[in-house]
Image 1 (cartoon, helix red, strand yellow):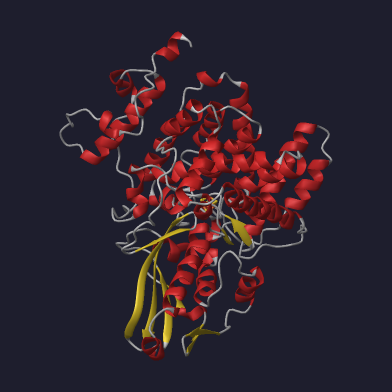
Image 2 (image 1 turned 90 degrees about the vertical axis):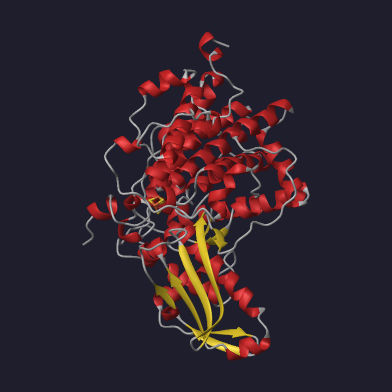
Length: 541
Ligand code: SF4
């Protein structure tokens, strides 16, 4: 170990603000901002091997002294997604990797899971209540209302309301809703049949005092009488919560961890890999066998391969839905890349084409896999397809890679966010690229430190990336951004596997803190509202 590295105190927890906040808060400074700034500076001090004073001297002035920026509305402290960062990570693969209709985990998969959940609850109401029912109604608020039309939120919400399951809905059903929006569907609830249509999904207030930017309500009515009502939140990555939500009780993990540092320590102490630690936790938390966990991961791998193949089969003449009139280009990019003179160009071109293919499928509203979201649904499939179908890497290594990638996604969800409405595109493509870097490193049997370094590097170089989808459609910049996310993941692995791992100066946990802080400070115009950036500067004609 070099002299410089000895300065690092590896016993300090960079995610524990209490260890980093000096007792004295300067007069006139907001305590929360000061605490968070101190946490970031403390983490930076740990990363850099500098003392707090040295780091603080070089830090920018506190936010209270800087020019005021338009603040994003705060999330409610009641939400589990806000409280979650304190205990060990308990997320499991079947919660994390979800199959559902694109183009957005928060705007289509989440809302469809919400209305499907409501539909299932409604079917369980007593018969005398159901006999009175006359109407089902969905109200969309905040970002769901602001950009929902571009995402097809109303179609996804209606599909769940009529009892279609997100993971198995036929994309043709959703295409049919787009092509014939006046269709009416009978929903059978007990003895009653209630007609519903897209008119029952209402785009409501875009601004207000919501617990989460992606808020919606679903009601079963008897005239003006409310028989059943629930307020829901689509909190990112297809995860949903509702008013009064309590997370499901789970068994304790075999290897509890809150940070990458703790996760890696388990792997290193037990002389095993991050993937094996994750597999042990999956079985201990859920009670499932290893074979059952692997069977689920195989389903996700197969779905990822299928989405790339399906996207590559579309011709350049295919035009994606919406006003941008974007032509599919995955197949063309792939074919032309194969003719490139240099092997490296062929590799980058192919990787980009695979990401474009899966992402274009998302743009079509077809089935995609949240890894971690719909907007980023091209990144992981690109690497999975490339490793499995092109390089013919053993499937078990891909399974291990999926588990290591999940660990990266869980930690970002645990301490920061996967929602563009909360954190911009760094929370979607940035996290996806970081996951994909961990996948590649694991598939190539890299040691745990290299897996961490690759994931860190990919996330670091997406920090600050805004979300400003043109016309509210998850197409521009989203589709090409998936290709960049995939290539950056490969670059991150290339650097991490060729540098001296112990000299990598930025640890993953510090970058997750930066992700969370940047998400908090980002102007709300850049959080999936289509109010700024490319959404304003691109003119459609
Ligand atoms: S810009 Fe990024 S975060 Fe926003 S919708 Fe597109 S992919 Fe998602």
